[in-house]
Image (tube, rainbow over all chains, first blue to last red; front, side, top):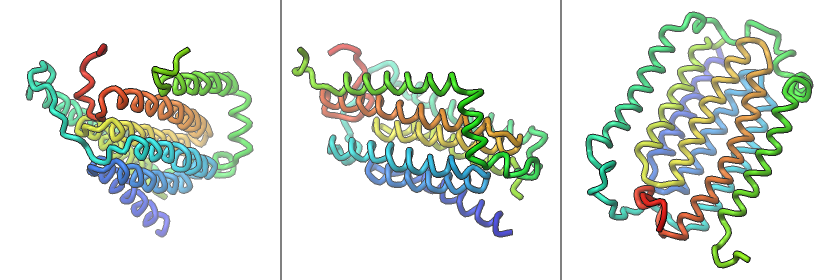
Length: 178
Length: 100
């Protein structure tokens, strides 16, 4: 019973925090609300017997990436959304086209709801299928990661190298080119 | 025990919120944050299905998604800084030209 209660509280916190992320005008509060949303999802990960991922999510996402976001928000010092005059005559600015995006978002929601209503196994409880000793152990996670998925793991290192070089190249001032 | 469908519904709501954020907001930083919400919703789906199937594969995919999100955030924020230097604005509508 307590498990169900915790699930609903964490889900409500995650959804409310996400609503506040896109409802804020100040990006600083948006970033802080996103940290709260990540914390709630990390709690859901613990309930799903994934404690390692919950800790990784908190350290990497909430700890590192969100601090990077906060750093950029403070660096740019553009506190609120500016109402810069946009080109009203641009063809993509036509009201019908603007509505088009909203219609696509609503279609996505309807499609997801339809898929969720038509699924078969959805009422089966999560966690009764396998012993948590298999799913929740960091040892098993590491073994599979470094045997079956070792190529993807090594490719990830290349991805991070490219991202690092790209970030340094793009954020450099133009006057500093040799 | 919580049914699998409940996790999927929470994930779908989070993903729809992220999509709405991308469409509705006029701030590059908030748009990037909305993309992070969407990635996190997909993470929740992967972990829930992985737990449902009784294997660690879902957790490993989530591990890679977190790594890719870190790289994406670094490159995206560098792009935002470079764009802000040119136009002094974070409104995506001001960046309609490829060359200036």
